[in-house]
Amino acid sequence: MTGEFGLIDRFFKQRQTQRKDVHLGIGDDCAIVKVPEQIRLAISTDTMVSGTHFLPEVDPAWIAHKALVSNLSDLAAMGATPAWCTLALTLPETDTVWLKRFCDAFFELASYYNIQLIGGDTTRGPLSITLTVHGFVPETQALTRNGAKVGDWIYVTGTLGDSKAGLELILSQTSALDDVGRELEKRHYFATPRILAGQSLLKQASAAIDISDGLIADLQHILTGSGVGASIDVSRLPVSEVLLQYLGGDRVKAQQYALTSGEEYELCFTVSEENKGSLASALSHCDTPLACIGQIRPQGQWELHHEGSPLSWELTGYDHFQQEK
Image (cartoon, rainbow, N blue to C red):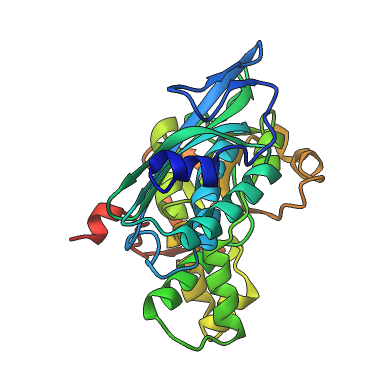
């Protein structure tokens, strides 16, 4: 069979070991699942569109990785443990070679994070991928954007700016990338969702968000939700050596990339003075680099500075609709 149900049977059904909390998965009108007692369900949906989030000719395995990671990162930002997902896949035509590459990579990553595909849809149209993920978080403990308090410290995981540089190289369509270019391209498509870090922050952080639209934009969501301001020391922004090589050693430019780079899928979070001392210990098993980049201030206060010297940079994050203008 080559129709919709044939594709489902061939590429999606029975690709994973069924979780015990999945009573009915792919193959019926609805999935039936069970949420444990004293647990809340965290749910997030993201869509990736050809030409906006990836180029049509990109390896479908890379697309699968990026699509799932972007959704898992949302769960990480809430401190949730991945459980289930649904996938709506729109294809311009039936391409079994493309589907095999996509599905092999998708299910390999899904199985690694113990997240089971329990349903979805396939249809014909412009290439796009919509994922909805579901995760478990202990009752009353979910991390949100609205818990930051004046005096809290602002942290980020990993390094920032690499994804923006990688995207620039991808869009330039340079046929022959050097080692630096290939590494940055890889970092754009192959981010690591900070699932363990998010879980470890449940009793440590006061607020959290994943960095998908750029640090300067995503931090603003925390500030707005919490009714606070912030002071950021750009000298503390974590930038990689490969980004500095790409920018010819220009550290100021690297810091600006770190503030505006989208699709990083690192975490930005706030921690009280009381919890600051135990943070490194709480995350010691995660092998996740941390950087303290600033502090929460009263509402209305916002500044970028370099070791105390004010900066007048006017920077924004990534906005899909503004990019279309």
